[in-house]
Length: 155
Image (cartoon, rainbow, N blue to C red):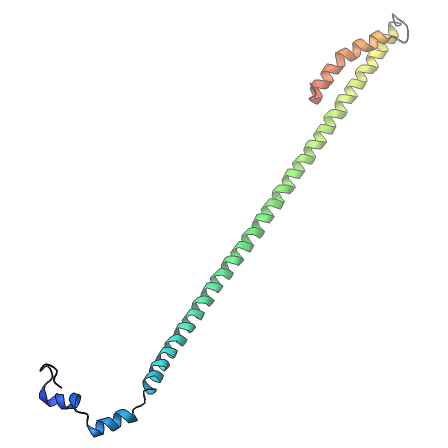
């Protein structure tokens, strides 16, 4: 067998004619050793990759826990702020309620006084149409009711 003269003659005997000693070495050489070494190397690489992934995963889990704590703290702060705002607004409404009741009471009191004065005037005049003067009461209500509706916002 010739390989086109590419192999020097000193080496051609090694490739072309098997040596008995080389044949024994080849037959004694286990093909399982190469794959085991290769598998061992691959296994080591995979274990290192696995350990790296676990470290990365733990780092990410730590980061998400930090973010979770930040979110919880921020929401707690916002709840506190909203509770304060709610109390402030409710106290303003209570103050407004008191003011409305006070104005109503003052208005009712003033109107009651006006009614009493009108009753007095009607009594002093002797009641042109008698004590059961319906037309005078109607005139009074016609004057007072529009003002009351304006004050109450019921126009």
